[in-house]
Image (cartoon, rainbow, N blue to C red; front, side, top):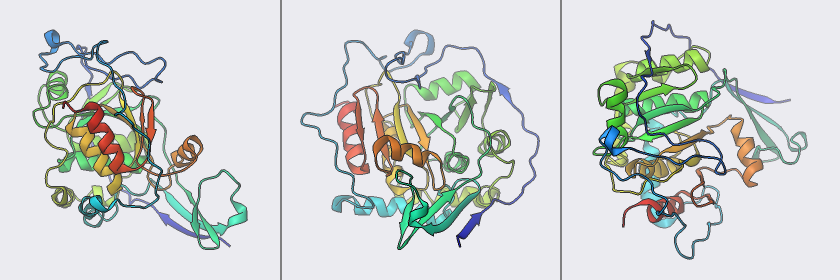
Length: 340
């Protein structure tokens, strides 16, 4: 007989939201298409007043010399990264695990012979942990969000993304970032974060609480999870959750803008994923997040794709690199895209 645990969010009332239609302006956009057909990411300093150089056909991106993807070590922590993983884990306790489980998460312990070969499931002694979820409608195109790591309001939105299990194209906006902060000011009239654009509906908006309510109304069951519905307390705990990382993922580090966004399989509740996200934001690298918190059907997709489930998992269409292991992913990203 299966033992089941169900985590369901409480019902909350949604107040009316004010939506802004996306204005027709020149934009910077990273394509989310496959690497074979993706058009290059282009910027126009004349039209947008951006200070960084656009990607050029003369700029090539390649893995570091003698690069070899590391062998994945499940739950292994490299000795020199133990403190970083510890400080990145503090948020889990302050936010009570928000962003670890998807909506309607349920886990059942079943005999191992009930799980067919090739199906992702956790080992639990003589049993297997079968995880399921209850998800809402799926957006046809990834939601676009402009934000940065060291912001409690942005963290709230990232948490609901994990709960709803939706894919997002992130445009990082670190302090002094030359590309996407000016773009937000052009689109919405001010540099305030997070800023969301839904290409499926034409809706664009500021304000983290409004973004959360919009997303759960459109792609969830309409209910905001408890830890995201406590007003000032939610914001305070989201802010305290950032203290351990001391501002990481907040300030721009000069980088080379790639023609295609990097693709990262990750979720907000993982400290290993947090370390990778920080460097992506600091280098202002657009990236497509394949959200895969506990209970996500995408865990099975990654399991089939890579022959193993572990996050973070990076796919770089600019170099062809695919790899696990957070510490090595961070080193690879810096070596490939940071201005040396």
